[in-house]
Length: 310
Ligand code: CP
Ligand code: NVA
Image (tube, rainbow, N blue to C red):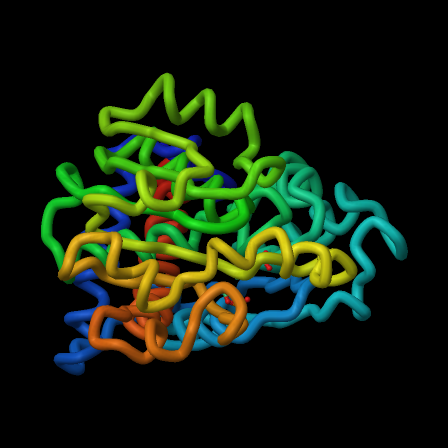
């Protein structure tokens, strides 16, 4: 039973699918006006060291819809680890709030928050992982394609936090994942080794764009320079240029292949307008599902923590 939500590797496959199922239910409930307040009286602190549109709005909206309250702490406000140590921030927050949601540069900061706070901690993106994103993406892919077990997802671009969380997902829930990336931009070797060891589906890393995209049911990309890597943008633009997802590249994948992107997208760099705006693109469905997936994560975490304490 998971008491924090730091990495998909910490959950079982059943627990991840359970979150996707709950997200579907909460989505249906919202659409049908079925109002329930499982987070009534619960307060969450939201720490953001990096910018955010989707994560911040969907967490705040989701907490409100479930009857709870969210307090956003911008990076300048608490200066995590600088004004006060991460463990001390955790030891303060646990006295007031029922959960902590944190987007930090260092992954270790989120891990330390979880270690030192008795309340659940949610990873809202670190330099290493972005697990909330992948629950919403997997929910979206399942809505469009049904069971994921026989699908091939081609992740093309930088082997970054989003890519690593897809590998963790595939380690737990059957899905074939091929990572297509330039040399030197491969995913975290430990996470890759873990996924290869644990996954039921096939896990491949290749520099060969043709081979990587062939037979894929879903093509996923993300920015070439993540938050915190802005000074590498120029260099990366040149290296990643052949990996741009454009109509020609999409034509290598299956005819009905879907296009996914966690957003924000740098249109004209990692993806062209014609792909972003094509009928194959489900990027805004993914964005919508961030709301439902994160509501599911919070509801399940509060339930698990209450059970663990009883
Ligand atoms: N995909 C995502 O996490 O978006 P934000 O950075 O806007 O939160
Ligand atoms: N890899 C990107 C994801 C943004 C949601 C970043 O970390 O900036």
